[in-house]
Amino acid sequence: MLYPAELWVHWSGAVSGVFAVAQVRCAKVFIGIEHQAMKKRFSLARAAALLVSLAVAGCAAQPSGRYPSLLPRPIESRSDAEPEPVVTLAEADPAIDSALPELRRTIERATADFEKAAQTADRLATAARGDSVGGDRWIAAQTSLAELDGHQATLSSAVTDLDMLAVNRAAEGKPDYPALVELRASAQAAFDAQASRIAALSARLPAA
Image (tube, rainbow, N blue to C red; front, side):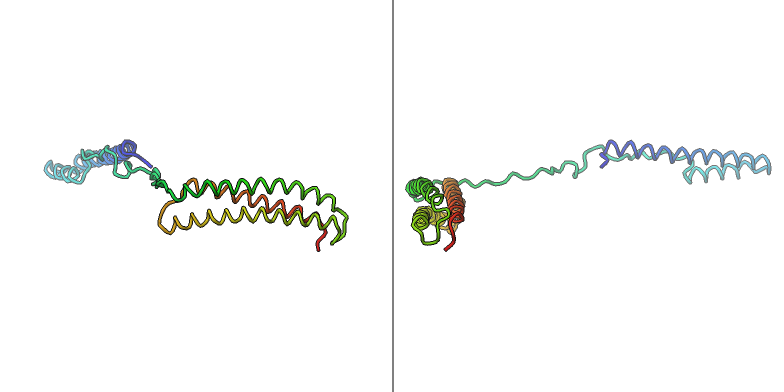
């Protein structure tokens, strides 16, 4: 993109070149007229008339004084910056603030209980290696896995409660509640980790 100052340099150079060529060409015409006047003995009036007509045609013209403005064009003052996003701050929600502490305790308790039970399940799964389906060691390992399922179900229930709180806020046209979003994400991550661990332990036991 050429800006006004650059356009002026290009424009003035081009215009000066055009008029220089025209003036050289006209000078040659003037010389030709003078030569014809000397050769054919043109009358002074006829030669003068020819010279005047050439001047009117532009041979003796000079560049116009109407130059392009050096002021910035409207498009040059336009900003291409991205508009600042409008951030809607969530107002305090007493109902959610009162519900989150208990849900957080439930999540932490279910996570701790699962971890403790998972260590036992891991030991029993190792002991059941090579045991047949229905054997004592196999049954003990499967029982420990059922206990893990129970702790995960407690965590899943807490995640569902958090989802309901979020759905109710959305139904009222309210923005996301940061504390709710954060706890929900943490609980979901714990739930996914538990599911992966249960699947890994189950894979170590003979399928029924």
